[in-house]
Each structure stands twice: as structure tokens, then as C-alpha cells.
Length: 180
Image (cartoon, rainbow, N blue to C red; front, side, top):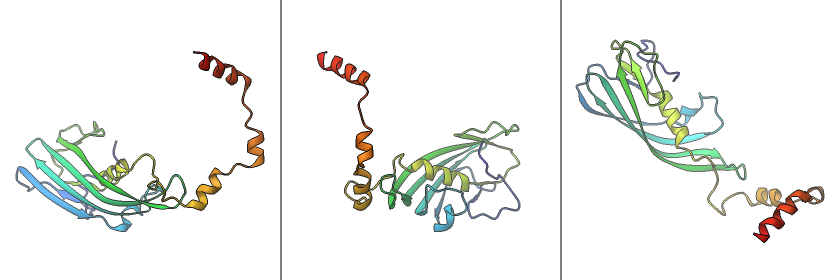
């Protein structure tokens, strides 16, 4: 279940989308994410970001269809060399908010809102969708990693060379593979 706030009177977040009072149909919203957006989250994956979010909200009597488009760049730590790397983000995500009396059935793609709700805080969704937009392996393009770190990682010490003896069982399997 998503840890988001729905219709909180105390919330004055700029990420609150007030849907009550909107006519049925398509409505557009846009945000430029502040560099501090990811500071509040206890996360090491994103150090900084320069992102824009466009939201197309399709409203009807029984549900809201939210289409998110995130694009820009995020600064992460390179998994290969440990230096900072800026990664491009350009992704689309869809979320459906249905109105129902029972609201504890929320999952990853559909959330349920009470008919009394009037706004939705989408901050958590933007955060999650940004994380989902990052590649699994965060690395510099080929040839742009820190050369000193790569050289250090590729060096083998004498101890490593001595301890890399091949298990005789693997040698026997290798011979079988060559004969096949």
C-alpha cells in the first residue's frame, strides 16, 4: 500500500491535485521538480535531479485516470567507478484512482478513494515513478568512467592470482564440453 496522504486538510503541498470542482474531462498539470525534492527521502539512489513532470488527469464520475510523464536528468552514483553520473529520464506511468466506500484495496496501479475525498497528494507517486525510471545498472557511457578507479579494479594482486586455482571437477566438466 502506498504511504500517501489523501485529502489532508493540513497539507498545502504543491503536489496536491484538487480534483473536486474540476469538470469531467481532461485536465493538465505540470511541475518542475526542485533539486531538494529527493532530499526529504532517505535514499542514496538519487543525489540530485532536474526533472519535469506533466500530468494528464482524465476525470469522470467514478474514477480518475492519471497519466504521468517524467523527463529530465537525475544525478546518481556510477555503479562501476563510484563517480557521479547524470542519467536521462523519460518515462510514462499510469495510475487509476477509483471512488469506492472501501478504500483499503489499494495496489500499485489502482488506488481507491473515498467519495468524500477532494484532492490527491501525488508526491509519493512522482518519487516512486522516478526511481522506476532509473536503469537497473547506473553507469557512465563506455569510456567515461574514472580511469584511475577502473585501473585499480582491474589490477590483480599476487594473492588473488595464487588463489584462483581451478577446481578439478570443473576441469573435468570442461573436457566433457570440448568433446561434445
